Amino acid sequence: MVPLSWYMMLSIAVFVIGVFGFLSRRNIIIVFMSIELMLNAVNINLISLSHYLQDMRGQILAFFVIAVAAAEAAIGLAIVIALFRNKATAHVDEVKEMQG
Amino acid sequence: MIQQLFFAYFAFVIVVLSLLVITRKNPVHSVLWMLLLFFHIASLYLLLNAEFMAAIQVIVYAGGILVLFLFAVFILNIREELRINKFIGAWPTGLTFAVGLLVVIIMSIKSFIAAPPGIYSIDLIKQETHTKALGKLLYTEFLYPFEVTSLILLVAIIGAIVLAKRRLKS
Image 1 (cartoon, one colour):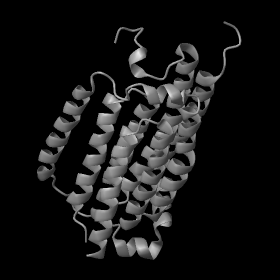
Image 2: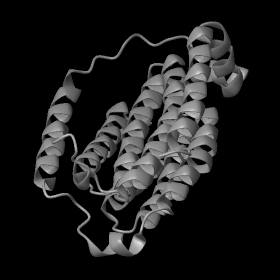
Image 3: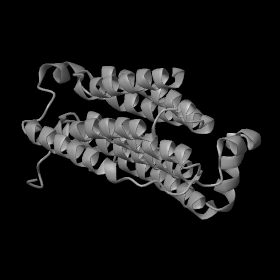
């Protein structure tokens, strides 16, 4: 039997890698992929907790996370296409009209 | 023992593939590594007795979301992408933040206290099958959130069309 903390460690590792990619990549599509990475890390955590606590609710929550991730990917990539059409760039550091 | 070996393999490959995803210069390579990553995560769900989640991981993520990503990658200029630096100038800030988050969460893992176990033991799930148990719960106790999810998907469809359609006048 694999201890629960191993799954948590794996989930943390993937989540932190996602955070790093989200904060440091220049290409906005990779930034979106980092978000997917973080959502997957959360799903690993939810499903392992659901297995070890013998409760289905974690998997229901992971199910909703997957649905929201699909919606988020569709909206996010539509924003990328709109950005690319207006600015002809996909780099996050070249979009600074709001002085951010 | 064999379970731990399998877990070690999957954990190692998942971490390596996540690193590959965020460090490749070519976005197409990133997307393809991510495809492999999703298959490994689905196998990890199988280790956790969650067959239905493994199936929708493959179908929704690998079959749906990654295809969307591939389409979006194709509008990029790959040649320019390969020439410039892949990280923004402030990447040490991101690294510091990520390492700090890692340390904080690992320190907080010790204080985790497990709740008393619920009714869905492995024997019950085996007897009832996983998909049926999940579906029963989803369509009774979680019916309202399930309907809200359908609304979210509707908003996503309409929003994606509105955002991505070409403006006729301007």
